[in-house]
Length: 362
Image (cartoon, rainbow, N blue to C red; front, side, top):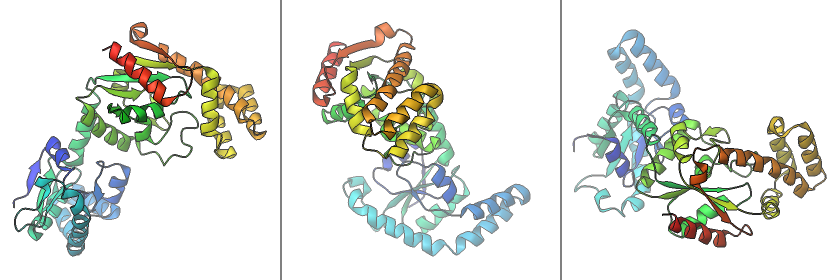
């Protein structure tokens, strides 16, 4: 079978069926990659540097010869690694009729490098020679990144799930999903719950570029849906929601759950009170400039005394002011805002109220 160079939409469609191999260097892959891609580096980081320097200073042919020195001794190992990948993937791929190998073939793989150039061409040639059906991404990862950034420019049809800190918005998103409603969980994608305590109990956040890659794929899946998304400030931990998409969010209807302060305080005391005291103190210190010296000292003092409720009470007052400012800092907020009175942080009951309100406002 000839090697097929395909467009990004075709490439992404086939990622559900075939293994996706990233042949860039380990450092490039670690920084960011296509979601679901497996690393199959043609060169190490150092080898990539050597070949790249030779290309710039001595020309293409010298660089290719150097690259072949590195590539030649790896050929057998790369083929054997792909055999393992195909074997591990076969059960999942078997669900798809199109994913079954052609008669006499070994299966199919997708692969890409940085610009769809020599690295992907070299590995594609090897795997094609061995008997695999090979698809390469036209333009490589660089073209994919251009596609990613374009996804944030689109005008999505979405509903913003609002509410002060401690309203259980993440739980509501999960319940809405159980009710067959399309949702986009930004905090889940960012591995962070948004507040100063948002990193507690969470995996390490991805790089900004990786977060954008994941977000773009999810938006692409949802582009025909009227989905729910939690109201967020532009920054989630160390990550930023892409500016164009965040601006779009700010123009969409907000379904604001108005839950009493004491109910929300009880919720966050239970949710965060179990965490290590030192980590809680460090989280407070990170916002001390905005919280103020007196409130910071008092909140930490309550924590040291194991009085989580009073400590979180100070913090909740701060976050309520911060959220209210962000909520009202929208154009046409009086038109966008749909306030929903909720007596408690009751996920099932509050989900029903949101759905009823959203139906009325269609």
